[in-house]
Length: 472
Image 1 (spheres, helix red, strand yellow):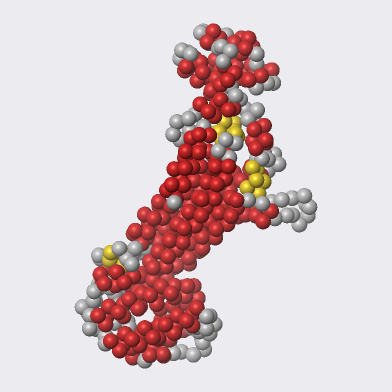
Image 2 (cartoon, rainbow, N blue to C red; image 1 turned 135 degrees about the vertical axis):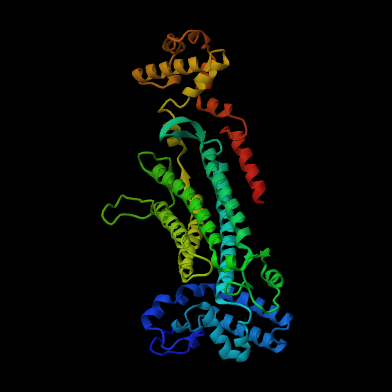
């Protein structure tokens, strides 16, 4: 890369000033070394703008042809890594414009007619972010497809469901995974909805007030695939709420994946032992040779804080800005770019990591022997046999206390022992029949929850089928 800080070529705006910008200020205010990633979008926007200018008779047909020829050469140079990015030219926009002028002469100077860098950068960001959202939506789909495969394979794999990290009721591992599918479905909805607000064209707002040239903004919007134009020139160039909304959607997605990561880490611990992760997602210890550390999900947890920080940075960036554009907004790009990069990389690795989960079904099943997982099923059994729920709740609590004293689980009681444990609640003992042990089994508990959204294996499979039909 070229950094000609010792020379002082004329800036695009230098005519107003009597002394050059200092090297320190140039470095401090330049954005070219991070906003050059919008080069493809900048070229797309400029070509659409040039086409409109020619169509409206603002520039000539030969100017348009020269601009298109020059931009094609610049795009090739950038793609091949041959383009010389220059700090003196501040940003991606002026670097490309200067190179274009060097290639095609006055036609390159005419390109900026009827626009400002203010509406140009706002357009480039929206184009770039729209592309990023499309990529994220595709990656969410990849993650979901792999998640559904693992859920389907474990639609009947019993495990404890937890509240307060205490054993609560039996669920299936497939049902547990489908909770994360539902979270990801809402994440996809948020990104798709945010995309609609991203997909509005600022170009034509110029610096802040519009332009006196007879431009056709709707034509440019159609050329670039925008749904509509931004209808207020001040708002078009100055707000970044679309970027904030993207970061908010990203923070929620990362929060969901962070929660999933926490569970993978916990499940992989030998103290729990519900799963193992493929070696490619883990690392060892420099001192303890036996260690297999779940570094990838741990890092997902950590990177979630990074994405949350970007959201707060953009909210803080915007909160005190008067209309219209301010230089503060140069600081919108790095948090936005970093957020998109983090989400994209995390989704890519998670889609693969899901396929590397090895389920330890026996350990999940053994865990259900702790914590009286079918106690609620016993209460429901008593209610179905005519006992009021609050009485049933009290009777089962007494039975759990008795089992705790004996050191056994509820299904290990004899019928007489179970009745005796409930005897202090009027009407409870006589409602316990021989069929009670059927509801105290894990299979009985799972099968009974056969409504939509329940954990019965048949309902888990139905939920997976519904999900697959929406992804097809």
